[in-house]
Image (cartoon, rainbow, N blue to C red):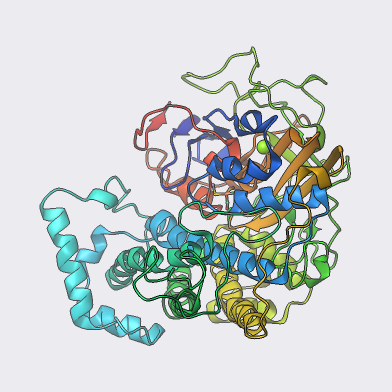
Length: 590
Ligand code: NFE
Ligand code: MG
């Protein structure tokens, strides 16, 4: 092999437009990788001079995947700016909605976006359905694991292949030597891929009960946008079976609340009986991927799921903190208001700053101007010495940090969360791996599964607390105290933060005379996918790829495995889409 630049553009099975350029040496080892967001952004410009109470509805359109998180971050930012407390029921409803988003998003990612990096769909045709059933039954009590079920899935797949229409399974690197699962494990995973499609339709209903719809449920500064009715409802009235409110057709009544309970049960069942066992089974065949693809080694969480209020981080299920250089003995504090902690850099982005291209800006004084005059796309190759991405490079105290499931599991572990310690310990023991295995491509993927269980298991507690409040006659979901701008200070600012499925997310808002003066969102995929900064420090994707060997530079499956383990969302990371077409994966080798 000679030295090459391997270009994967666009990376598929993600949200948004991401281009990876990997420079390889004569052995096929990546010596430098560059991560580029190829869409332009602009939501922050659209938000200027608008009513801050409306911001969530615009901000939510940043993304169609994590469809709820920008709504939550936005209402929290405005509530923080106005010092506007929300009722306990609204806090619980938000926890339930965020929890459902996490588990929905993670299952979809595992089966529909990431699994085909590990699962060879065509090999599933060679599986024995009876042996597949035995394998599945050895892993869990999932009710669908009969030989007939797997035979039906195999027939369906055969029909796809024989008709020449692989559809959703087209264009994989099938037969690549890096695929290691036996045919039966491949068939089981394909079956669960299809099951997960049906399951996620159920989970989406939780958002519809509390937020009216999914995707993009409704939110409200000061609480939750749903009244609760303690009356059983007028049969036959209202918008549908879950919304037969006694006082109002849209109030959430016992029918909706029972549905929520049922959905939580289905979520936990799927995590325990399908997602968790599948992750362990697949990971067992790819132990070498517990050694590669870590990258930065710094991890950050903002924390989420408050027991009481966002002002009380000690009550969060997921704590807030930073781990530097894998040192789990120390978790540093994060201050989102401090001018020198969170900053965004544009040294290698297609933006200019009024303070110059090498200085970082805190989001309160952040700038979004698209007037960069240097070379921009369209391009044949990226000018990676100059600017090469529409993403900025966020840094914490000047350091690149990884955000997301692995960061959360590590911070939970470091702060002594008992269930996390138990789950991490038992997972490593089952796979016979050392603790260092967490810092890897497969460690990131396994962390996503483990946190799904932690969050799904917490949901019944929030549900029970909500039902207890309602039983006591507390049905308040909205606080009217500061709704009117006349109750606001003339000038104020605030930050709304949360954990989104892909990692730490915050929106910063500056309010003047009742309108938005500045708005900046710094999102998880920007932390992970951003380009090098003014010091030349790589972003997490770039660092995770460097040093990896590609078996076949024409089929860079290894790049997909590591990049997908972060679950990229470039729509979030750049905030607005351009009008590029839907070209499938294109691999260029020069
Ligand atoms: Ni568009 Fe998002 C999540 C946010 S992104 S998916 O999770 O914020 O990185
Ligand atoms: Mg931003």
